[in-house]
Image (tube, rainbow, N blue to C red; front, top):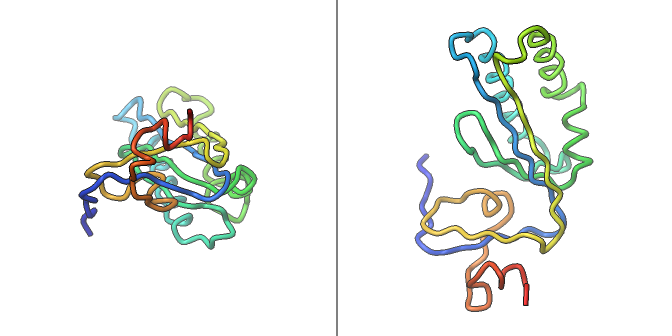
Amino acid sequence: MADIIQPNRVSAQIDGDFVVFLIGMRINKVWKVHKWLPPFKAMLKMLRELIGAPAETGFLGFSRLGPTALVQYWRSFAQLERYARSRDHSHWPAWIEFNRQMKDSRGDVGIWHETYLVRSGQYEAIYSGMPLFGLAKAGRQARVTEETESARQRLKIN
């Protein structure tokens, strides 16, 4: 299904605090397919698992930043950490296997993540001529009005 372009400017809203989690991998030696293909497949498996996860998992949604990077939205850091460390989910076994495989070849494939704790009202977003993306996809779209026209207004900075 093609992404439906939203023909107007919209912002995004989400209730309460939330977590922005950026995660990805970098293929440093493309010819070493046996090194980068397993973590790439593991990332896809984790994403499928999260898409189907119940709401109490805390996963709110994601958007792709490229073929090997994602931005994820979580309700809380505790829920993100609980998923990441759970032996019953895909991440922990994949993390252990990645470290086992890469112990002598760390430069072949890189993985990274960044975690940001966002307090309620301490964010703003604008989308124009875009399909649902980012926070507007994980939270909800908000109409841009005269009162929310600028980033300063959306952040309520005088």
